[in-house]
Length: 346
Image 1 (cartoon, rainbow, N blue to C red):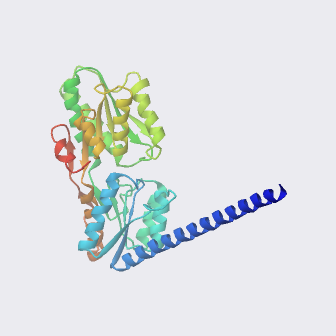
Image 2: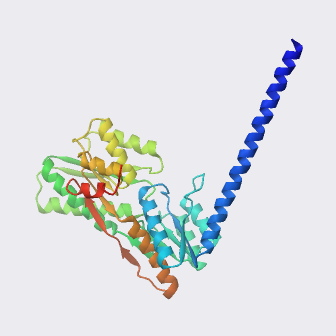
């Protein structure tokens, strides 16, 4: 019996040693592959004359992946430039400020930034400029006085586009109406607030001019775009608990548009709340096709990325670039959604 017990202990020890050996081997192989990928990226960057960093808080969204693809293609094809999505492959999440610090310390030749307008980001943009690194902001212009160029949509005019669509919906609703706009709580002093002002001013002007007989209330609700659960809870409260519940819900990100779409289905609010979205994905387009989402306003992400690289290249070449480069927008609704769905095969 004693010998049998000893043999079991020996077997257990051997198994643990084997498991330890396999784990160590796997870690070594993983580190080797990481070093190999990093070295491959370094060699890839060395092939080009310029090295640009693309920095956005929203690393994983379809929009910013599209911006990156456009920037990468433009850089490689026309400007001898390598564009890296800074922070996009990191295991741990980094703030916009941390990514900016990494880019500055790396000595990049230019930065494409989705700015949030925070004092930390503005200070880092100033530091980049002092070190001769040009900065182009994309879609959110959080460093207006110190960046070289802004590529995007005029936020106030975009708000007017939403107001135009809302006015059309009011003609259908023809009753008192509560309108809620979801604003990211991290968008302080940024274009999203300007967008809200454009929407409100334009709609109030329409209502006043037409002597609209029904009461229309427009308000903004803050959500934390980085916290999916918190945003989903805010949307749930608006659709289920709010009194009165909004008849029109405006979402200013693709992720929030998807969440509102799912909430309308989950809480049986289809047809009761008209959802206006931002940007496009297959799920958003399917929501429009099923008439759960009313419409979405989209921008050409690849065009944004391409123009950003053009702006950096022109500035580095001549020392001058236009301060604002506009990008195209398009309203997608039930009438034209089929054209866009063709781009997203199942």
